[in-house]
Image (spheres, rainbow, N blue to C red):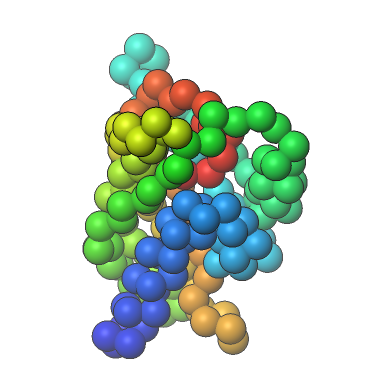
Length: 152
């Protein structure tokens, strides 16, 4: 993998957070392959294992995002801070892990940490460029206030 490919994947990874922050769900979904998947998981000490909170294919993720404007959310501004990823490559795929923190700023202007975790992404090369085949958001945070139904 060359530096240009690493840069393209990194830019898409960072753009994913910006798209979510801006509520640009169409652009966020465009990062996924047609058979793309999104999962939100967390390690739960009480069960000594992983709990899956959200497990959706791309069409289910689109349905969730299409419904979002119809719900009343505590919509504070969200800001994703995503670290530079580590890379592992195979012939047609790239696997990245990046630390992510999501901050929320309420209408009064107070900012707090909303969620902390890691993106475990599988990227595949298509004719249009690198696309997310699978995103697993592994959270350390386990107490999410609304709008927790939105992707992180």
